[in-house]
Length: 257
Image (cartoon, rainbow, N blue to C red):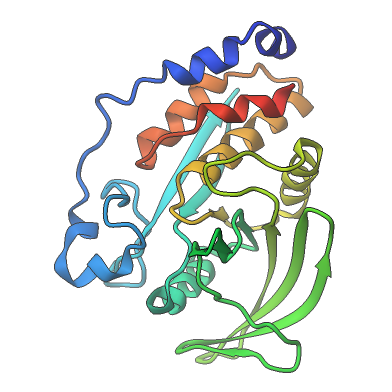
C-alpha cells in the first residue's frame, strides 16, 4: 500500500493538504518577557499544553512533548530547538529529568555561515563540560559517513549519580533541504530506534520543527512497517503539528522512493 501511494504521489498530496487550522494557539510561556531570550526564533514557540516543564517550578524551555499513537502503540518524544548558549544548562536538566538516553541531533552547528545550534557537549575525553548542576564526560566518539555517535556520561553534582546518553548527530541534511543520502538517513533512524532504552527520544534540529517533525513521522512509519502494522502517514503528521507549532516539509516523501 505504501509503495503504491509513493508511486502515485498520493503521499505528497497528503502532505500538501494537511490541515493547519484549528490548532492550539496558546504560547503564553514562550512569550513571557523573562523567557523570550530562551527562544532561538521568536515566532517558533511551544504550545503551553505540550511544553516540557523544568523542575518543581515548571520553568520554561523551548521544547514540546510529542506522543504519536499508531495501531495502539504510543511513541513518545521531546521535540526541542537547538540549544542556545543560555539554555545549555536547561537542556541537560531536561535530559536528566526525563531520563532520556538518546539525543537525536539533525543539524550541523553552522550551515551556510549561519549558526543553527550552539555547541552543548564536551569535545574531548580529557575535558568534561562543567555545568551548573552536572558534569558531562565524553566516553566515546565514532564518526561515520552520514552521522556521528557520541557516548556521554552525565554526572549530577548533587548526588554523584550518572546517566549514560547516546548522542546521534546526522550531518548530511541541510536546513530547508533533503538528506544527502536517503539510505543513510534510513540507517540512522533505525539505529536511533535500536539505541533507545529509557525516556522519550529527544529530537532537535535548529528550530525543532522541519527536520525534527520529519524524523518523528519517519520513525513511527518505519516501526509500523517492521511490525506489519497499518501505516497512516497523515495521522502521524497531524499528531505532530497538533503538539508542536510548525510545518512538516512535503519534500520528505522522497524518502519512501
